[in-house]
Length: 610
Ligand code: DMJ
Image 1 (cartoon, helix red, strand yellow):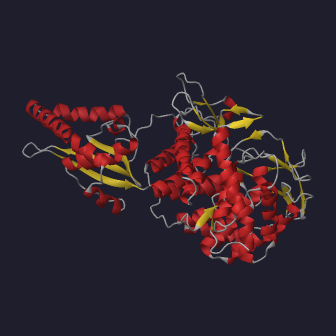
Image 2 (cartoon, rainbow, N blue to C red):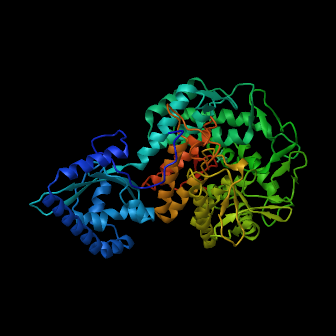
Image 3 (cartoon, rainbow, N blue to C red):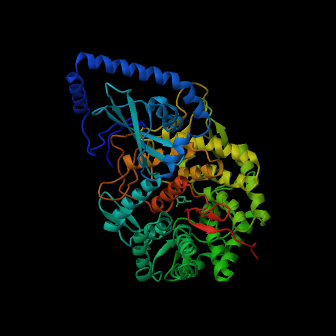
């Protein structure tokens, strides 16, 4: 809950199994101590003797524990993962040789597995293993006439349910204070309007469907049916409306088969078309969907490169399902123009393109972050969407990855973390936006589709860096922008400037974790995602409903709520977390679906585009 005080991360907590309320440690100690004092000297000696035996037993078992950590799962364990919220009993040996594995092997620090506090001699360990987190209750039953047993019972903490809970909490805030509006302001319990299209509601539709939140989905569907109208005099941003609203409607149509969503998508798609009426065919950034007019931003006739090249998946899909070619024609034209445009640097593109001349502007600055990011993502994803037949897209993507490796990838001095920096007029800037953390996932997706294996190597390294951008912060949440230390001397790898310390609940890291887990099955990626979810809960959850973006990831005492819940927190962040924790790899298989840049899944086409 927000605002919390920072607690050291530990995977192990102890609590009274009969009570859910918090009691301070002093009381716990007194209670145990009193019990201890009531025992006779003989009893105490016996207990100490038995505890010593337990310790020796534990030490003797150590080689077997370590052996099993490197090896297969315990037979007992297989039993526990199948039962939901199950309670099981294990003998001491089972605990020592098997039950510790989940906690210690995954937390990579055995200290986290040691006891934190003791209350009435009952303890809980929160342990994670593969797909699940377990709450393990340890009870000492000391019977002077019998061999002492350590009885271990487990109750599964369901990570999928934790995501559903987070979603419900966010949704409650939205429903109570921002229903039908674009964004929730959870602190002031009000709303913000951007385009007036119920952005959060539409962005969340397919997430609710995937999470199985039928009641919430039903209410939202009714709003779409009864209230959503695109016939309004409002300027919308072509890119944002395409990826969030058009993408959200199309994916919900595919998941549900409900014609309502396709009708709405068609209506919106046709209202966005005036944006493409420019001298160069490079679309304007803004469209008035009521009047049918379009224009660039007030201060320039440029459009942002990522914006004009990251609407293709949605427009192409709209053409395929409506059999109306005009949507794919306009966006394919943009890709063709950019493909043959001079001014690229080994496949890297500048951040702006002029809507009159069709030429790149602000040349010489190259980034994988804001204003260019999803250009690279959509090259690969369009190629996959179209059945891997459109060679220009593949060529541009492969060339761009080579350009990234040649000009933008570097390692930090202290720990050799690999990061993607920026190039500004031939000067390297060791700065990486959190937005760039989409890249490990995209590289992994390419490697999965038979692109060079070293793309996967780079993905693994960048994934580690994005993880470090979280773990090296006091809140365990990443800043918006990180700078990296190139010096060989000691010091921190990640440096954060005061203006860059905010966190907007962005999805890119958990998005990449999802891809990395799907392709490698390495459970560490799930655990990293789980830590992120827990830290969102600690530092951004607002009592009563909603999550808020924060000002300062370095200040766990006062992270500074910004009073805004971005629609992508529900549309992307929570969806990717859910998919990361789900064992069902057929749930939106990456061989059947391609996710748009707002996490809305669209089908990979059964036959190549015409
Ligand atoms: C989202 O709208 C999309 O993921 C976009 O590609 C980048 N910005 C936000 C999330 O950070």
